[in-house]
Image 1 (spheres, helix red, strand yellow):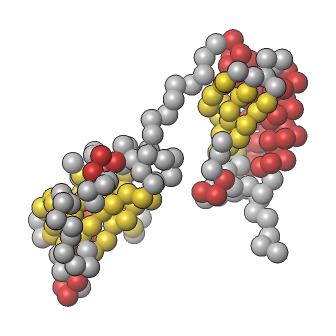
Image 2 (cartoon, rainbow, N blue to C red):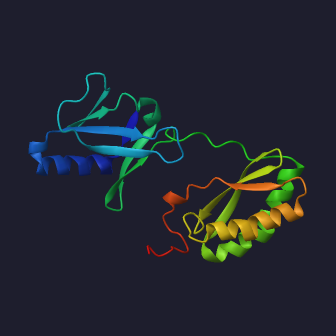
Length: 192
């Protein structure tokens, strides 16, 4: 079900040993499972777990898995890297749809690859074509573009203009990026 790496187990046991009053039961859950941005709750269980939560025994501690998160946590790995716990759960996010195919997708992709991405690569950004539906192209911004205060300008004056002007089959470009979760935007507007 869930793998906890030896490095993570060692850190857990060391913490529990130093904080013996906290007990030796941990809890893991996923909030927002099945979305592109799941959040993980992982910590010491403050009391008895829910009787319907599955329990996994490890050397020196017990892990209680939130009963509503079981499917999302299948094949999950808890590791300890760079001074913190990292949870990788491939079933917590929806599968990515296959990339769009066909002549229109090829035209749009060529514009992204040859005109758009080279221009924004200097800012650490990139654009992905994630879908086509009728006369609409769906794109996702990443890298320095995700969360960037200038993303709307890049989209409207660069991406939309290039694609709509050069691909007559496309009349609209929609950005599906979750800009709120951008971790390293190129430009951050001031909080004024």
